[in-house]
Length: 343
Image 1: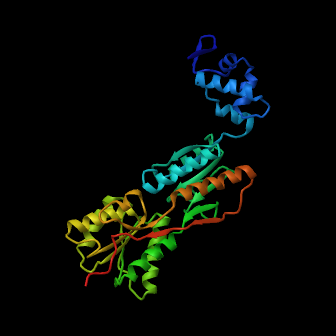
Image 2: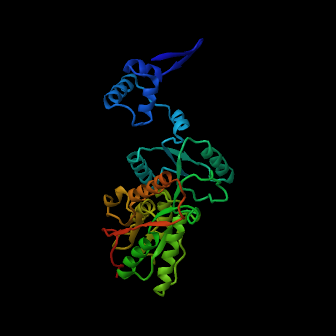
Image 3: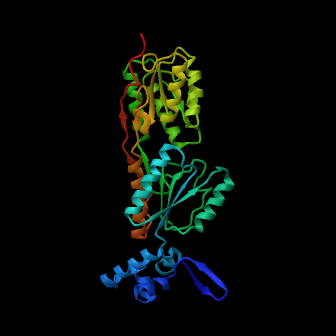
C-alpha cells in the first residue's frame, strides 16, 4: 500500500500510524511493541502484531537504534564467501545470531589491496551493526583495518589473533594427525599440496607438515602450491602424478585433494594403491567421491557459534575481554583414499 507522508510526496509501505489505526491503539503503543517493551498488555501486543502482519509492516531498525542505542545486527567481514569452509561458517553465524535475536550483515572485500581495507574500515564505521566478526582477511592486519573504537569484535584465525578474541580449528593437531596416519602406513615421505602463502591456515598446515617430516628424520620435498580450488589441485596433481617417487600427498584442503585425485586417475595412478591422498576440511562430498577421501574434519558450525557467542557476550557485558584464543578440536576421518605404499 502507499501512504501520504507530506503534501506532494508519496511514501511506499505501511507506516506506524497505519498499524496503530488498524490495531486501534496509539502509535506510541506500536513503538513499544516494536522495541519489545514489557509495558504492553499481552492482548494489546497480539493485536498490534496481527496488524503488522496484515499490513506487512517492518519496524525501522535505524529508528530503533536511535531509541535503544542498538541495531540488532552483527557484521561479518570476509574476503570471500564462496569457499565451502567460509560458506558453512557463515551459515552457522546466521543461525547462531538468529537464536540471539540478531541479524547478520555480510561485508565482502573483493580486492585485497590496501585501499580496499581502508574503504572497508570506512564502511564498517557507517554500518548499522552492533558488533563484528572477521572471518577471513588474510591481507589485512590491525594496522590496515582500523576498526571503530569499542566495537565488539571476534575473529577466526588471522593476523588479528592476539588483538581480538579468536576462534580457530586446531590446525596443528589436525595436520599432525594426517601426517601420523600417512607415515604410520609406511610411506617413506609425504608430499604436500599447500594453500596460498597469504593464508594463515595454509602456513600452519604446511609448517606442521614440514616439522613432522623433520622429526621423523625425513627431508621434506618441495611443496606444490595452489589457491584452494579443485582446478589448482588438478594442475598441481599433474606434476605430482609425473613423479614416480610420490606415494603420499597431504593436501591443505579437500577441494585441491579432489582435483589431485582426478589428475592421478588420468595419469593411470591408482588411489590409494599407488598414491595415498589426505585432505583437510571434510566437506560434504568428501565421503561420496571415489574413493571416499580421508580428511581432517573441521567443525565449521562450532566455529561460527563460538564467534557469535564471543560478540554477543561483549555486547551484553558492554566490555572488551582479553584477546583469548578458543581452539575447536579437529578429527581425522579415515576413508578409502589412503593405504600402504606400493611394494
